[in-house]
Structures are given as structure tokens and as C-alpha cells.
Amino acid sequence: MAITVCSGHASQESELGCRSHTAVDIPFDVPQIWEAHTVPARTVVFYVALTVTPNPIPSDTPPGKPLRKRKSNAEIWAASLKDLASRLLAIAPTQVPVVIDHYSARLCKLLSELRSREFAVDRVCKRMNKALSKGDIGSYINDACELAVVSHFLDRFPENFRYQVPVEAGNQGTPKNFDFSFSAEGFEFNVEVKSFTPEPMDRPRRLVKSFLPRNWTHELVNQGAEFEANCMPAITRLMTTASAQLPRSNGAHNVMLLCCNDLDEFADVLTCLIGPHGICHSTESNGLLPGLSKFLHIDTVVICHLGFQHLCVLEPNRRSKFCPNGSADMDGGQAWTYPSALPISVNLRRIPLADAQALALGRAFNLHDVYFYSRLDSIGSNCQEALFDIFNTLTRSLAVQRECS
Image 1: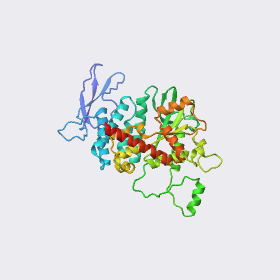
Image 2: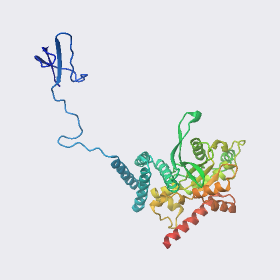
Image 3: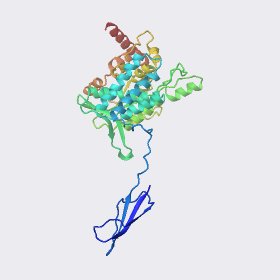
């Protein structure tokens, strides 16, 4: 790059013409393109002019081709949804393609509806794409369950619905938030959604689980017994995290909504919570299980098998395991339906809810408590048998309805 410098005498103040000039090299970062300095009496003008064409701007575009047009936000969003659909098809090669098509179409519709209401779901879509590209089914299921639940409650209770609700940090100093809150029948509900990481179907399993107190189980193991691990450690971890994220009640009802990945896991959770030796029957003094005081910010745990519904699409063998008689036919879009996930609640408070609040909770969360607990009482506290009985009854009923339609 060349820069020309002109210098000379000016006989009048208005005369800025150059008497002579010399070409010299000057660094490109000249503070000003035009600059004049004057002194008393005779004026000497230094006139700096940039006279050389700058070097060409580097570009990734080959010579002769136009620069690429920058994609709009709408185009980027459409491409993200397209990537989701293609990755879902790739990750579930054994599923019927039309099931995946319906499933991914419903997912894209849910995301777009939430986005149109100005909820920040772009990062959710990005996380789901990343999880599918890495084959991380657990992370994908976690986001899918939360998305399905949020969409359901937003549709039913749009007024006063809040998403990703911030919680005052308090003395801990760490900002927190929980998933959403809504109002129903005059009551406010705060909800935190949690999911288990799905276990591979082909992993080796023992036939027996122990739900006895820990010291009793250890004694049996020392005598040679072998047990499959139950969900107690995972439940404790998830409930501890949810309790830390939820705020103090202050009149609202705090709910942890726990999504299971199959019916065995669902029954396991129920047994760990309300079984004869479960968390709800533990005391602070025995020290064998976590006491309820560890979960002060959780009033109710709602358990469902929403993760199972999603896995039935991605891994068809999971559903055929529980529905071997041909009733496993499904519409992929229905996997996103929260009410069909058989929600059942467990009250962590020692005092029962008032009738009005209990009814509001049951209707808002589509609870199947009446059927489950009446069946549980009739068969003698066997959570697995009661749960499977309800599931089989509902599955047969749905199959009949499909045949009639």
C-alpha cells in the first residue's frame, strides 16, 4: 500500500495546494486520513492523501461466485427441525417408518408452537439434535419428557403459566429455576420434571429385587443371596435435586413429576416410595432410608411412564415385551401425550390434602390414584401387581376402541 505526502508553503490561508510532493511508506493505522498542522506567521501544511487501492478482502467464496447469503432465523429453525426428523429416523432403524414420521411431526409441531409463544426452545431443539447425533438416548429422553409435559400443561392452563421460573438464590448465592408453574381451580402448582436414564434392554439382570431395609439386605447378601439393584439411590438423587430447585411452598403446591422408562422401573419407584419399607414409612431415627425432611420442598411426587412411551417408538422391542399379544400397535404422535402415561401420585406430607386441593391436583395431573390405590388395597401392598393390572386393563380397553373405530 502506498501513501502520498505533499508539503509546501502557503501564501494565503486558503491556499492548500502542494508545491512539491514525495511518496513515502506510512503504516496503515494512520490515526486520521486527512490531517493539517499550522504554526504562527507562515503556514506550513502537511497534506496526507491515501492514493493506493487496498489489498483485496479475503473470502471463502471462489472467484467469480457471489458471496453466500446469510441464513435467516426462520431458515435456521427449519433446518434444525429437519435435522431432528432425519436423526430420529436414523436412530430407530427397526421401527416402522410411518410411526417415526408421526412421532417427529408431532415433536416439530410442539417445538414450533412453544416457539411461537416466545418460549426459549431453540436451545432445547439444539440439545435434542446433539443428543441424537451422539446416540445419547438418555439426554434426548430427558428433554422429550419435559417438552411433552410442558406442552400439555401450557395447552390446558395457559393463563398464568410460567416456564423456567427463577427462584431467589437466598444465602446460597447460586441462581436456580424450576421447570414451570400454573394455576388450576384456584390453586397454584410448581412443577419440576425429572427422568431416569434408560438401561439397555440386553443388560444382564437378576430375577429378584430386595426392598428390605439396607442392613437386612446386606445380611442376606452375606449369606449368598443375589439381588438386582433397585431404584432407591437414583430416586434419592433426583428427589434431592428437585427439592433444591423448587421454592418454598408459600401457599403453592410443589410437585416433582418423575418419568419412568418401563413398567418394572415404575413399579420399583412406587415400592421404594410407599412399600412397607419405603421412604414414606421411614423415620429420621432409623437412618436406614433418607427421611422426608431431606425433601422439604416437595409436597407430592407424580410418577408416570412417559419415558416408556418415547422409548417404545425408538426401541420397539420395549413395548412388545409388555404387550406380546399384538396390542402394541401405536401411533407415534401419541407418545407425546402425557395423560396416557398412567400418572399416579404419592403424597410426601404426613397430613392428607384438603378435599378441594386433592381434587384439583387429581384433575390437573390426570391422576389414576383411585384405580391404583383401591387395587393396591385389595391385593395387599404389591405395587407391581396393582400397576400391571391397571396397565393391562387400559391397554385392552384402548385396543377395543381402535377396533371399533
